[in-house]
Length: 244
Image (tube, helix red, strand yellow):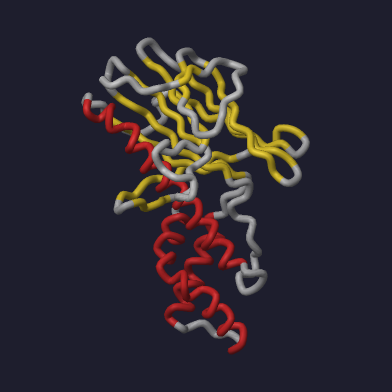
């Protein structure tokens, strides 16, 4: 197999953005993201067995692509099983509160915020999968089987709110919403460019995402308060919790 230019990551090493790291022994890799009033932390717990190694990257992209392209997901992490020729991949993005839009969908641009948040998230996952594919071509040539997990780490995933967004958007498109004419006109003007987002919002509410005609389950990792203004989640990286 063509050898990939990994840099080995050891405990307590400081990693850089868009660098591919290999992990040779079981260890915890923390991903930290500053927020306006605190910090979100995702701890990736690599539990490696014999003939396994890990891969980790923060906002990984193919080095031959321009930065101006689509934004990558925060975390690209894998466990590679050389004996059984399997790769278990987790692609994950951190959104402090994906449901942080107003409960009143008619005000404060709540609908627009929800739609754009979901579109941005799915776009980042899509971009990361493309970069993943450019790397995994070498593994695929050697017959490796792939298993992937798509995830979001957030303090709040309110499926009902996203369902309400989808229902209201659908009603607006059908023009069967009873609203003040001026309010209705403003909503329609701001949301009409996002008519194609309806199916995406519906799927997201059901913890699903569709990317290039493939539907993925969306795993939600809850960021719990660990200290004052610090929220964290632990994710085990050993392949056993990824459905085959």
